[in-house]
Length: 441
View (cartoon, rainbow, N blue to C red):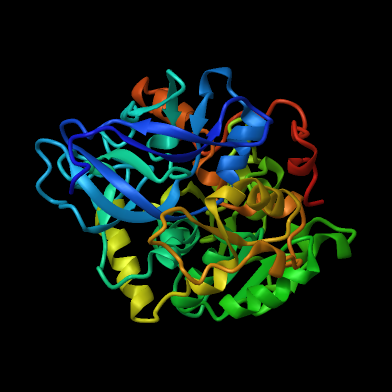
C-alpha cells in the first residue's frame, strides 16, 4: 500500500483527561516496527471497560489515551519479522497476546502467555504529545498498531461490523461457560448479570447442553433478551426478601451445578458461589474489579465447591478467535443479536451516553469509510433496550484494569488463592452511573 512505511494522519477519539468527553482529533500513527502490524480499523464497539477507564479508575498515568479494544479491521502494513499477516488480511486485534512458544501457550490448561502482557506499542502522537494505547489496541482510531502476538487473522468473508464483538465480550462470556466452567449436558446453571458478557455466558451454557439456565438480574426487562440466548428462568433479587443464594437453592434442590458472575461485584461473586450445590458446584468469576477483596466461608469450598476465574473466556486469542468467527458464519453462535445501535466514530460520545444510561447492549461504531455503508443514524435508534445503569457493569469488565494485571503478573503479585480477606463493604462507584454498591441483596 502507498502508506506503508510512512506516518499516517488519521481521525481518532482522544481521551485527553478523565471524566471528560472524548475529542475527535487528527493524530499521527507511526509505521509498525519489528513484529508489529498496522491495522485500518473498520468497526469498533463501545464496552464498559472503556467507560471504566474514563470515569471510574481514572489513573493519572492513563491519559491522554485512545480508548477502544473491541474491533475488527484490515492489515495496512507490517513490520520486519511479521510473516503470518499481509496487507489486506481481515483481522481482529486482541488485548491479550498469544506467543505460541511459552509454557502457558503450549499448555491446554490456560490462555495466559508469558509475553501476552507486554507493554503496548507507542505509535500515537497528537499535537506534539504522545498518546497512550489502551490495553495495547486503541481502536477508537482509523488506524492502530499492535504486536503481531495480539492479532487474529479471520475469514475474509466475515462482516467486520459484526465480528468485531468477538474480540471481547462474546468470547469472554461464552468461553467462561464452555472453557472455564466446562458446563455439562443436562446441568443447571445460573448467570448473574445480563449485559453483553452475561448474555454470552447464557449462550455458552445453552451450547454446552445445560437443561436449565437461570438468568439473574435486577432489571426484569432483560429477561426477554436473555430468552433469545437460551435462558429458561429469570430471577430478580429485588422480588425476594431472602438472599438470592437461598432462592436459587430452593429452586434447584440444593443449588445449581454452575454459576457465572458477570457483574464485577464482590458481593455478587460470593452469592454466585453460595448458589452452587455442595459436592461438585463450580462458580466462575467473570466480572472484573480490582478495588475490593472478595471472601467466603471456608466451608463453602471444603464442602466440595470450586471457585475459579476466567479471562477472555479461556480462549487462546490468535487461534480461537478464528474459530469463533467461523462458528458465527456457520450460525453456531449468535453475534447480530447483541447489536442494538449502529453509529459512527464521530458519535462516540453519544454511544458512551447510551451505555452510561443503560440504553444499549452493544453499539457498533463505523470507523473506516470502507466500513458499514448501511450504518443507521442514532436518532432513529433511540430506544430503551432493557438495561439498568447499575447492571451495565455486566459488560466485559473482566478486562478492566489490564495495565494493573500486566504489572502484577510481571511482578508475580497475583495470587491464585480463591479466598482473600475482605476489607469493608462493597464500594460506591466514583461515577453515579457505575455504582457497584449492593446491586444484589
